[in-house]
Amino acid sequence: MASTGFSPATPPVFNGEGFHIWVVKMRTYLQAFDLWEVVNTDVEPAPLRANPTVAQIRQHADERTKRHKAMSCIQNCVSDVIFTRIMACETPKQAWDKLKEEFQGTKRTRQSSY
Image 1 (cartoon, rainbow, N blue to C red):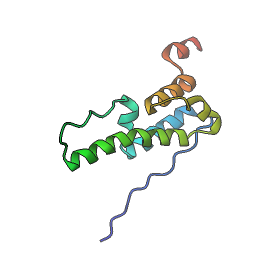
Image 2: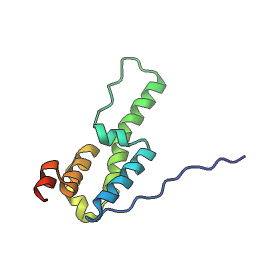
Image 3: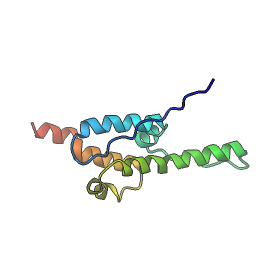
């Protein structure tokens, strides 16, 4: 019996409108690829111990690659105009937080606008 593969739909490109919808879809998209933790915590993988096994080397490489995959997802799911606002960010968490700050606002910003 053939198994069906899971292929999540491509998230919409954020163009500056509907952030509250895009952020939920994007978080789910990142979770589907096991990348949300990298965005949410911004934790670097621990350095390899001396004399690591091949499996440990592969796992470490996979963990380091997750940061780049998450950053790629975020950068490619925003319009060019929005991208220019996050292109200096070095980590996916920095980019995510910058977008949240600008389009969702901080608690203080939201309270002052009411």
